[in-house]
Length: 238
Image (cartoon, rainbow, N blue to C red; front, side):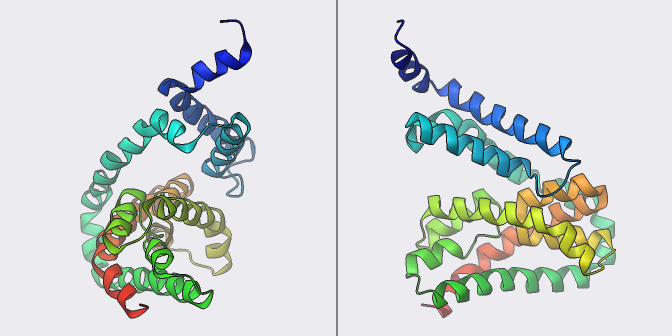
């Protein structure tokens, strides 16, 4: 097999190629992120998405073919979500001491994320399917996809919206909270965990360990609360 086109066709059909490409793209993104001094604008997930999207587009590879190779990464989202219980357990005493503020900020943050997204969507005339896909966008991907399936949304669209929400949140969180003069690392972390799930939580850990721990708590609790209230809130916009 000496024809480059045939070689590429063969390699593109192999699952290991796209798993390797996914990991390599993130490695490049992380390397550029470090070179940029961990500036939030150089988000490694955003860079990896741009690299992979470019490669897939230029190679003419279908999403189904890519996903067959990269689905191991998708599978690991499940165990990663279960691990959200760890920061909650490790910081249980601190959460108990701030239980009322935690509950209040969780409810306000979760409701605001859903209502604001649906209100903007309805303002632009989105149909019920698109609104259902938009409602859980501030929740971690495995939970958001499950919620979207249950309330009549498109899981693939929800996954894309979750990714965009997380990237945007990770980019703006540090300058925004600095501008608002929020100094408490618990509050900073919890806010980004509720608003921007896993990608935001990863950013919080890069900035401060306490912020990262509370981001994980906010992310996990918001996933549970959103699963409960999203169908009800969506029904108000139907």
